[in-house]
Length: 185
Image (cartoon, rainbow, N blue to C red; front, side, top):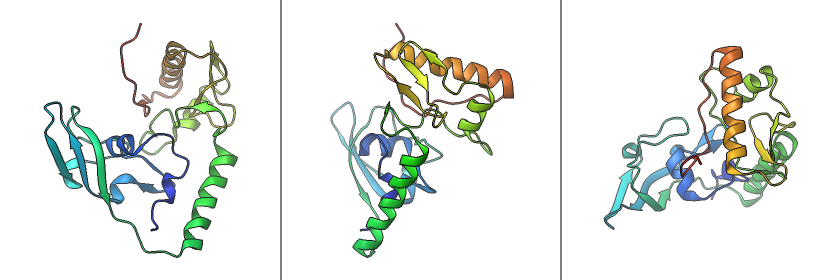
């Protein structure tokens, strides 16, 4: 089944992909979803159509109390060799442009309309900037990496410093793409 190569190498699981409309290389989850299945806090099973998910860039408007348990997705009939070649191309692109061998949560900030988060971060002079064990990747500025012993506070502190510097230098307010949970200590 073709049409899913864009997922190759995205860290996480299907629940997160459904919740945040994960995507790469010009394809997003919303382009493959038919319906989504979940369970709410009362234990009730829920089904959402693609339209009911309210997908936008790296976002869905599905109720926050729903835990996704599965989805019906629409792929495309393709030759196995063609699918493998597409997956290999995605992997090669990631390996040459992203720090996939580093400990990272994936792309950190959403791309602002008409711009690239990594370009704004680089222009703000944040490439390689470090707080504790967290560092802005030298390879791709929109990845925060754990270079050893990074705490959640290191990652969040670095992310907030990146956001502050980008806002200062460009006037653009970066939004977190990574979903953070819990409370700040």
